[in-house]
Length: 475
Image (cartoon, rainbow, N blue to C red; front, side, top):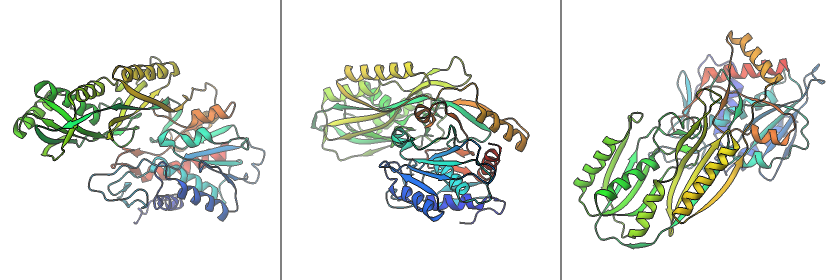
């Protein structure tokens, strides 16, 4: 792969390409953690690694900066692994298949993992650059950020003295993030009983939806394939005799599902079923979904949920809250509280769902967890809540924010935006571990993260590395 000739900081992209050659999906970070440890050894830097495969690497200050306050540079090692239906990659054992054009770097048929591989690449570049001018640096690489921030929740900062944190896990150039939502994950399971099928068996696939990040895109109008399919099953159940054989949709709780597949036992023929599906989709508000498609095919399942289980599952799926719950009263256009039904599947005699709950107000997060719990109770479902992390509260006085705004204005002749976001960042966990931590998150332009359309803007990444170097010089 040949990068465009305008790239100034080639070493950043060399590091990123190396990262992409290593499998590093959430829960599979041992190899990428080894890579970071070997990097530290190669460059003679002090390092530590814990049982969660978090890696901390320290680099002494540049000459003349020994007395400057230390700075933490942080990114996470794991990526969301999504792929198209036609892609045959094995994320557990294979690296990504990278490609680029004159503007973007992307992966063929999969997520790129620039969230957050480009952060790791930038930090490694700073650590290996002997000409960079900076205070004492502590590089913190965490694991499993995308599945509950497990690494950040369990990392030991007892040997870290710095009170300034630059997190490189934002996806829009020109925006400095200074606050984010807290969150939690829920898994619900509902017992089902099976009986023999007795009508016509069809699979109904819903695909081609826009999907996206369950925090950043939750208010964009993108349709959740699981929710859309649940509504379709309710509609069909009202128009015919229907029993569910199976249903599956989504791959991650923190990604809006782009496809869902239901297999049903139904007392109508294929022509009538297709007609009813068209009627349902025509009556639905699908303005944002230009590429929606559905297919009805003959299936061969022999067993289905009994009538009571089918009714309970349809009621359950259509009762789960989803999407934007409340907008902020204080910050324009900011989602304050939301829920995403991310993954849905059948296993054994149970139907499972996983949900991602977010809120910048802890009380509202707990209220939404309670509401989901009441839904579970109503339909006799079990619920587990895990992976809770706190919100990152806005800090009114921030030297770091002031410096980063000043440097940005000097370099690019415009002021950056200072924002809060509805996505989760590890900064909230770090603020709970380090008293009086001054933190800001930034990053280059990354489009359509958590989807196979993810791509990294090459010029933006190049600029943002220069920006990072200049910020460190000012600190």
